[in-house]
Image (cartoon, rainbow, N blue to C red; front, side, top):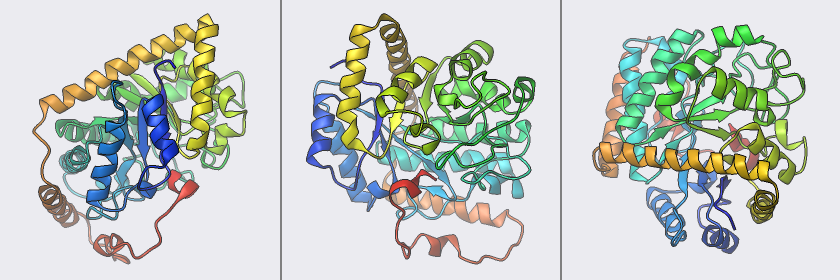
Length: 382
């Protein structure tokens, strides 16, 4: 087997025999955590530690998680309720509190030995937020998003956790939810450069990682039905040659219907790699991963173009792993869980104090008491 560029999801809170086999025999580049993998503080620590121990002589997988706060909050049952990104522009001292927010999340993820947060969202909010993006954006102008998302990244990196900006090249004006079908953005290249691309251009290289979304851009990509994840024009030419991004490009989950309906897993994996994605995520059906790994190995060994693109991706992935190590080395040692919770509670108290008065239907403290059935499967995409 060659080295691996996949990011994979796990099925539950403990590993299956198949998952152990995959992690031992061909360790993926990354493991992506969801709410279905998180039961308690102790359980999550043990899960992460076991996964990393199975890598043997290979580099252990980097752990990724979507911890945005608000409606995309994987730690919702073990950490006091965290606000949504949109809430930061609704009160006092938004940049200061956004940086503090990033620090709190960074402290929590560092405690669990999670290297990468698949956040912040740097999409710019349109007149109507597309389904799946509600209250996940920092603002409706490039300037607001750069200021608040940039502060969030600084806070998180200061705690030793890497960021991943999403969803390139911007889906704030999208027509739908890519988890379930197409989302079309009718912006021209000039409009994208003046608006959607600004946060990626300003924050991308400091973050080191950008997630490629599944949006469709018919006024930019000649193949009017091709999502960004499969488009060389968008994922290489625009991202690398125009915006000058030199970090890793991480695909959004390739099992979303916006892209999974376009071919077999093997076909869309190769297409995503050749379009310019360096890490390719498959987050739900782990039983398909061995076949994907064998297919990529065969294509790398038999096709020089695929090999060249694969080697380029590997080099970027190694550089990003070193970036993650550097963030950790430059930060303090992980705090205790009690200290993490105390810091989160201090932040939430100050955050709420600086918000305008509003009627609270379900307080965050109650929302986090696990009174509802946790989301599982495809619902966890958002």
